[in-house]
Each structure stands twice: as C-alpha cells, then as structure tokens.
Length: 361
Ligand code: NAD
Image (tube, rainbow, N blue to C red):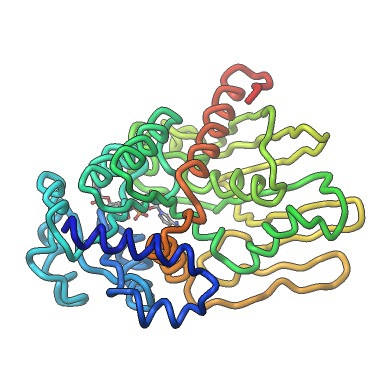
C-alpha cells in the first residue's frame, strides 16, 4: 500500500512540474490506473447520484463501500461488482489502510457524522472527499483539516457547483468584473417541503436544518460570486410550522456585509421553491436560475448573454476534477478551508438570529 501511495504521490509531484503536457500524454504514460473510491454511507446521494456518476468517470472508479446495512451489500455487489474484500462496516473501516484498491474515502453520511468518519478516513492514509456541509461546527471542520494535514492526505468538499461550467463563469467574473463593481448579490435556495419525514435532516444533533443542508449553497454562492469574504452578518429564522419543524428551522434569512460596501442577501427555506443567484453590478446584472440543481443550471445577463453550457454529469465532473488534482498533486479545487469558511458563516447566522443583532465575522 505504502509503495502504491508513494507511487501516486511521486507521480503526481513529477507531473506537477510537467503540467504543460497535454492530458492524454499524462494519462497514457504516467497514470497507473484510475483512483479507487470507497463510498462511506449508502443512502440516497451515494446510491442515486455518486455511484452512477462513478460509472462515467475517467480518473476514478467505485471500488469499495462502508456500510452499516448488510442488506445493501448484495445489491451493490451485483450492480457494481464490488469485491468482498472491499466491503467494510463502521467498525472495521480502519482496515482500509491496508487495501491497495482504495485511494480515496468519500464521506456521504449525515452531516453530524462527517467529522468523526472523515478523521477516521484520514487516519487510514487515504485521501478524503467529504460531502457538504463539511461538518456541524468550525471546531469539527478544523479537526478534519488537521487530521488530513497530519496524515498528508488531500481533502476536498463535495461542492459540485464549483465544478459546473456556468457557475465557473460567475467565479471567473468575480475576478474580471465584466459588469463593473458588484453592488449586491442575492442567493436564495428553497423547496416547498410538505412532509419532511422523520429523517436525520430534521434532527439537530445529526446536522439537520435547511441552513446546513442547502443554506450552505447560498453562502458558498455568495462567496464565489463576490470573490470576497463577508465581515458581518445579520440573520433571522422563521418557522411557520413549529409542529413539523420542532428542532430545526424552516426558513433562514440573512444579510452578509463586505468591506467595500457590497451587501448580499441570502435565504434558505422549506416553505417555498426558490433557486436563484443574482449579481447586480454598476453596469448590469447576471444570474443563474437554477443555480443549484443536479442538471440544467443556466443563466443570463443584462445584455442578453446566455449562460447555458451543458455537462452530462456534475458529480462525474467533480470527482474527475478531484481525482486529477490528486494524481497531479495539485491543490484541490474545493479544499477543506472552503467548507470551514461556510460553516463559520452558518455559526454566525445562528448566533445573529439568537441575539437579534449583527455579528462580526
Ligand atoms: P441519506 O439519509 O439518504 O443517507 C444517509 C446514509 O447514512 C444512510 O445510508 C444511512 O444508513 C447512513 N447512516 C449511518 N449512520 C447514520 C445515523 N446515525 N443516522 C442516519 N443515517 C445514518 O442522506 P443523503 O441524502 O445521502 O445525504 C448524505 C450526505 O450527502 C449529507 O452530508 C448531505 O448533505 C450530502 N448530500 C449532498 C448532495 C450534493 O448535491 N452534494 C446531495 C444530497 C446529499
């Protein structure tokens, strides 16, 4: 295992210096094989999005799983040909350290469990991909980053939007500012959820609540659209159905203030379907609507440009981008610090809502 890991690391380092070579040269001559990915938690996102996407990826492939549900194992083995030796549970996942088939451990568990299992994953010496939101608290995010640094493994957060081409146009415009100074940004994401059910998403301890689940997309969207970090936040929670939303908030509304006078408004809600990211600038505007969706992210600008580049599969693009960063020993596109910054803002939002006043970041 050590040899294989050091091979990848050395290869990556070597390629880092030769990044001007076309990709096919790199792939055919230097890449030993696709990186083996092990999914931890076989719930909806793993089953219906990530595993199918891993059938489309060029630089990584599904090789293992960690599950606490033995009944899922035969189904996954039949579907994806996963070997017996690559199947783990939460108690024996430390043994992945000795499994040369697995290069990356991808944490796809309820948010409240991310830090515990991302740290376990880092300690196996394998690279770590962790779903958004990174964790429940800044402290947990820092612990994940620390464990990955200590074990010299790479860490990426599953913010797939940052790998999506229309979103990448907005990220580029945060630097180039083709419509002049950005004055205000709006990022709203919500669903009209009639029956949320009794799942971990309604459980505060496990990291439930809209602000964690999809609210982080509006925070992340504001941050990548402005290309800057807020200095203060004002927020409030609203709950029109306290009999359903007993532990977590139904709606959160917040304003982020930035150094240069720019303000951004954010909203996340389970009471209404909304999905827009808009920047109003000195000389025009642009928006994505929807800005957060598995397919069909698209937008337009005040002067009639369409932002409608199509990609087949966001998750495949995300995982291939991340696999290439590992293979070429390049910085991850969405490192742990990205997840941490959003969770710092989530904490400030909750604090502001609790105090009823603005909180300095
Ligand atoms: P899910 O409820 O469908 O699956 C969660 C899995 O965790 C299940 O297999 C469950 O058995 C397992 N689990 C282990 N211990 C558990 C416990 N104590 N309580 C509850 N479940 C436990 O959830 P999901 O929708 O697959 O979400 C998983 C993660 O993926 C979350 O972090 C979520 O935010 C993230 N996610 C990301 C995206 C995206 O677009 N990037 C989309 C959906 C979900």
